[in-house]
Length: 94
Image (cartoon, rainbow, N blue to C red):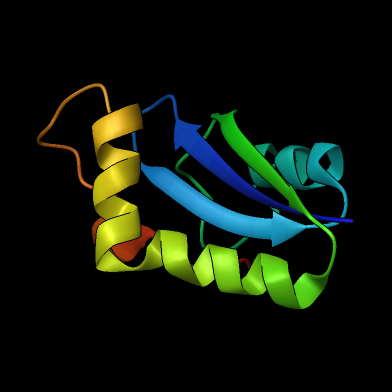
């Protein structure tokens, strides 16, 4: 099983979208600064997960969430301040 996840930064509300087969491990890695893309932007909270049976399906869903319509949906549902945008800052884990 694979999980597409969305994290929100406690610092500024920034959203990060990724995929993994171990959500707890990935959240620890993000919060400890092990990921170049999220380093210095934490701490993070896990705000959404979607479990999919294959990596290919998870990757397709991750890509959809990072698209214009996916970002808009996440912004509507999860940003505290409408001026905070998920925008181009949403990308895959390295």
